[in-house]
Image (cartoon, rainbow, N blue to C red):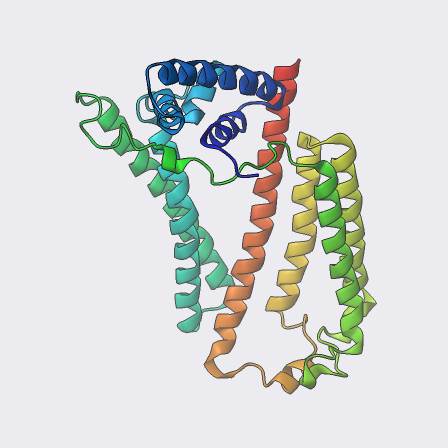
Length: 325
């Protein structure tokens, strides 16, 4: 069933409020939209024209929802808050990763050490975050405090119905689905660590050659498999309890416990089997340092993303619990 404009609008509004208030917001918002649409229909408007007119008049669903839960949208001022916030997230999501990867590749091509590559990428990423946050906020703070008629700057009315989500998804993410996905991925990963010991049949060069150094079985591979086991227990705990701040802390520790040794083994040249690398023709000429740098940046990025995701989910869960109380 195709979602209507009203469905999409209500979903966009409901997903931005605590879970305990979503159902009531959906009910009241649908009643309001229905009443105002009926009034326009009585005046001769077509159903489609009436629906679009009502939703356009209501404005940005996130701003509407913020008013419903009495959550001020204000840092630089309410007038441009949502425009500032959306632009800031977009710039951070695009510019920071591109800057980090660009610097890492440049350092790798110039022959810098792995430590220098990682350090430069981290420093540049932090610098870009600070500059984007500061200058974007400063520009909007100046605009907020500069007199101008409503709509004359071209950013007051950036929101339109075309920005509504194309589909309506369930507002609440299923913990069971998250658990199944996490356990499936972790089990596959653990099986792959064991399976690679007997070669990789679909890669002719590695058909009977372990990809990872067999010497790692003395400690590190059992260690990583144990960490995977702890990750599975962690996923079960999140399913049973929900995200809490102490679980978010455990998530950080698990990421560090896996990522730091893996990167150390990679940088020290102890992660991969020398016979496997020789069979693949590694280091592939001048591309070797670049591949290593990209791998390091990717692994660190995935770990940071997982930590940030845990913190965000914990913050949302804490807010919902406070609201329900």
